[in-house]
Image: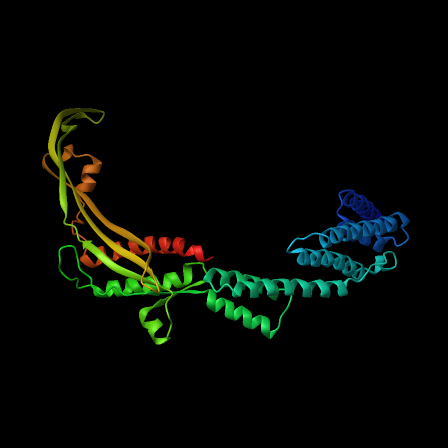
Length: 382
């Protein structure tokens, strides 16, 4: 019985493989048809119909790729060598497929296209290498970036010291080196100097770190002034940061007074356990709700200049810190208060935020905004 079921499963598998191979062939998926035919021939090496299907699939696949190669060879397309290489790669994949499957090695006489692959691999590498050299001669940052990309493409097909040196050279010439100058004066709008200068130093440090690792542009590098001087780096651009103002707000109150009222039980008369008479009366209270708000603002002027001092880009970035608390007081009968009145009545966090907290919050907003603006601006070097 077990043998019977095994034979039945094997027959079903062969039948399924045959149908699937024919279906793949009809759709023009010749490599898939060969793979499925190879599986079937592993089970039944004498299946003539499947052998013929495998041979026809290989023949049609070769014809399709060779027709494409002839078409590309006669075209003026700049990337025809790479496209021809890819066609030969597909043909070589078919050869490798046959070699991996003993069941079809004697059925399909596959051709080895290694020689053609080497030829067009070298031609493709040479094409990209020459394009890179041509762009290098233009002596502009944009051209160096294109040259680098051409050399990168060439490196997919060739690896030697000459190409690696050109990759390194073109990249170094393509990179835009941006030096961020420090903010030297930290003056509030009121004209007095902050005692929290370390916050501004932290701001500069965090900003530099964020720009270095989150700009998503391999052709832009950011340096502090100290780092650039120590490494003898000549800036292509400089970013000037100037704090325009930092206004620490003062709390101001907005009050609303209303009369709250409620019907409450003022007396209960118990005649017997199941007979209680309640007497109601209206109680009132004057409820004053205070909304205390403090708004602080700051702004940073950002200017980008080229090596000659010419302005390339400038922005005014703003940050705001808003603090608000709400609480109530009342006069009258507490029983007239609503649940919300009671919760606000218990609100005791009246203390305004410290200056350090305000400045840190404003700078955090400015930094977030600056990260976005700088990333957008330097995306032009992609």
